[in-house]
Image 1 (tube, rainbow, N blue to C red):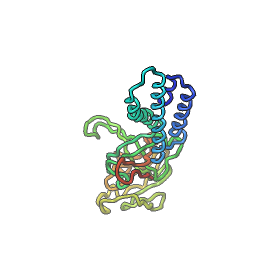
Image 2 (cartoon, helix red, strand yellow):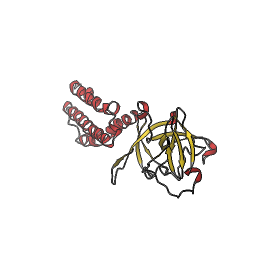
Image 3 (tube, rainbow, N blue to C red):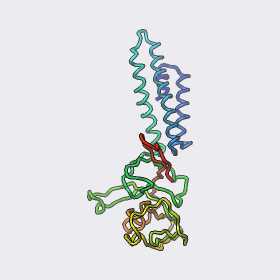
Image 4 (cartoon, one colour):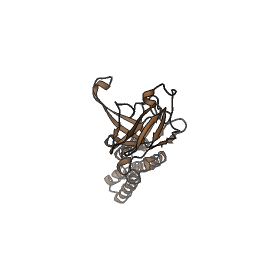
Length: 261
C-alpha cells in the first residue's frame, strides 16, 4: 500500500502525501462512481500505476540510503513487478467492494445486444438510488429447483434481461409485436429468428397488468429467450434484480468497449 514503506522509514510527510493521494483516487470508486464507464476504469487504473510504482521505488531508494552497505540493484528492478502486484491488490478489492463486478455472458438470449462470451461490467449498487425503468437491462438472480437443472441440485443463476413493463403497465403480444398500454412498441434491438406463428405461445400473449413490486422482462433474442412470457419464468420480483450491466469490454480487438443501453 502506498505510504506504508515511507511510514516504516519514518518519512512521515511523504507517507501522509501518498496516503492522501490513495484516498483521493479511491474516492473515484465510491463517491464519483467512475467505473460506470470504461474510460473511468482506465483512468483509475492508470492513476494507481504511477502511484504504486513511485511509492515502492521511493521506499526502496530511501532504504538504500539508510544502509551502510549498498542494496542490490535487483531490488530496483523488482519494483516493476511489485508495482503490478500492488496495483492488483488495491484496484481489484476497491472495484469489487464498490459494487462493480466483471462477468462473462453465457447465454444467447440477449443477442444481438450481448453475445455469448461477451465480458461485461455490472454495477450491483446501480438501483439503490435509481428506479428500474422500461428499457433497462437488468442483472437478475434466478433460483432454480433441482428439477429444472441438469445436475438435479438447486442452483442460483445470474441472468440478463430487458425490462419491458413496470408496475401498473398493461402488456400484450400480438404476432411478435409488443403492445404496451395500448401502443405498439418500436424495438430496434430485438432479433427474430423465426417467422410469425413458429412459436405461437411466445408470439402472442396477454394482456397482463403488472402488479406492484413486479417487472415484465424479455430477452432481445425474442424467439429463443426464456423470460416472463413463460409460466416457469413469470414476472420478476424487485428483490431479484441485483444490478445493471453497464458496458462490455475486450482486452484485444475492436472495439475495446461498448456501452449498453
